[in-house]
Length: 150
Image 1 (cartoon, rainbow, N blue to C red):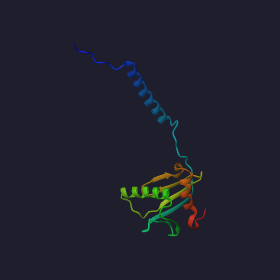
Image 2: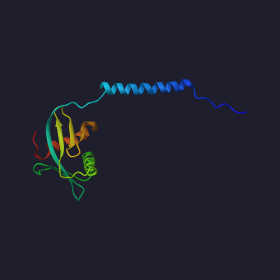
Image 3: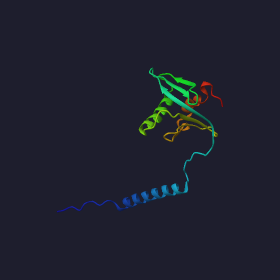
Image 4: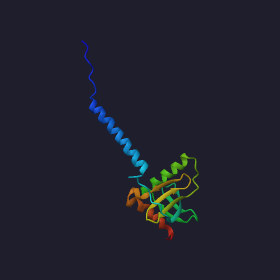
């Protein structure tokens, strides 16, 4: 005697297809209409500071102003972990794209108060507000450190 193989329940199959169709149509509608999309507001930069970051043999990172080489800050070993991570990510991306180390990074304060770091060589833009107030403050202090003016 041969047993008939058990069939997959048609109602479950229909429900799964209906769910997939709904999900795809909802995503397409949201994408085309822009409803629910998150966009950065287009505001002007209120302040830009171009900075260079150099590793020292003792593990410190020297931050200097690109225009005149003025010392902005020295990030001692074991400190400023968030700044170090962000800048290493940007530097690694430069290396992977065969970009030089010479061009400075840009620290930008926007008119609406946001703060970001930009790499003009790779066109990478990191909105620091996405990482919380404490991490944003780590970069905000570099905006005015070393005698910079508003």
